[in-house]
Image (tube, rainbow over the protein chains, first blue to last red):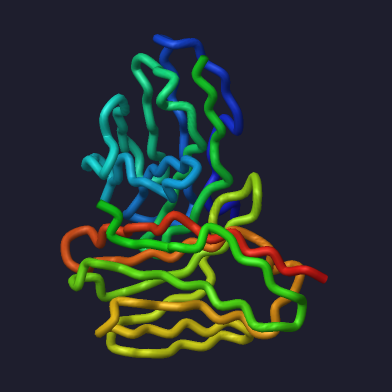
Length: 108
Length: 113
């Protein structure tokens, strides 16, 4: 029982490159969330999903897309990375917000 | 507009003493509150929660107090231990719909041995 896992753990991108962050949970949760954490800003919700096949925007959705094709996976995509997207990204699962270990992203 | 505020970015406490972390909120529709603890390079972990129908919830060394009229909650850690050194986030949920969770900016607690 791994709980919530995130891949990759760390990534460096150049401006304009694209990438996908994967969140996987094995707790059969309906709700999944993507947050970003920046110094002095706390955790801000990017997108969330209330079930397989559903997604919705959070507080800071611009520049990101998400997909929930399978219940256990929630993908966060950056189509054209910008330096402002340098952050630590956390995925959470379930209404009680079980968090993954985070993905540190640096956009040069 | 920061609906959940933690006005103290950091706090230092001696081992064995009480740590009090504060959190204020502005949205009167919030009806469930949570505290999370976060170590460096790890995701936040759930610590303790309280429903708006209560004013206190206790779990071991951790107690959360809620003052709805003041829109204020606090986390008390007694006695504080060096392993409690971490960043603490308060969060609030507005029930209904998908139960959006709003986080505060965090308070870094340092417990000095």
